[in-house]
Picture 1 (cartoon, rainbow, N blue to C red):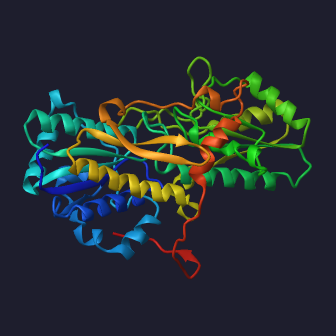
Picture 2 (cartoon, rainbow, N blue to C red):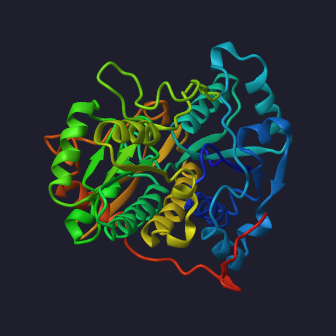
Picture 3 (cartoon, rainbow, N blue to C red):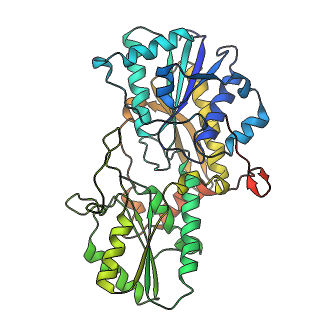
Length: 410
């Protein structure tokens, strides 16, 4: 394919993670290594919103500053800011996509890298299709990110390993804390995961490595039943007085209703997704009424995605490396694709990088497979532990000042 010379734009979109800035650092390193092809890189402030508004910042000097890139890698959240904006379809553009191309022309942007999850890949797919339609030559590439780990066609996603490490350790600590009393009580830990239970599943690996583990784990991949839930609690109470269970925020009954429905109004985000919260709170009330014991709900909420102080070293390294790989593939002529991981083995852990058509990834969900869930549907298997453990291994070395981690601020 023709050697394409021009500037690049990079943006971050969707929910932040502890590794999304490592992905940004990887894109910047990739551009630095291909400076003869991509002389300048612009950061889009608040994702596609910043591009459409022409709110760009020159990140070229940062791409050449190794010390600042290292600090960026260990900083949580999205350094460039984020958004949750859905673009119109290319065949029904209201002028939005045309405005994006105008900005591309103005800044001679020929490479576009977008770091995000399912909804962000929708943006990549639409921009790729539209620029081809109007004959504007450029390379559009998706860089994977999401703590939900639900992107199709990739073994895992950057951000998941760090969030899973936080969840596994936090739940183990909660189990230890709850075990100090003899008064019967139930603690229900709510973990992010709308349609896929990958993150909540990580709460259960303690059972396979001799660490603290909850008595049950409930994922959206299995219909939730109050009768089965009550039976699981009774069995746990027969073993000890303090019961801990982990639930995905998106668990539903067999009829499709979310467990949290009825507690709060069904507000929706820009992509039409119901804003979920309250599964643990709903189950807490059920436990108090049914078992007449102490019950509490612990919602990990946003801390599980921004706890960079306990980030996985594997996760941070892979986030940077696969982002740099995406730049290299774009320079070699690929476009309309997303960088992906392909696992070769669990032990020893081996993966290779590849790419897949973004049209086959956008707006699709990769669920936790059956072999990772027990037949009873209330826990994860040893096969899941073998899958997860390599992703959470290793510790980073964040910079501390006066006992507090130092962060990069753009």
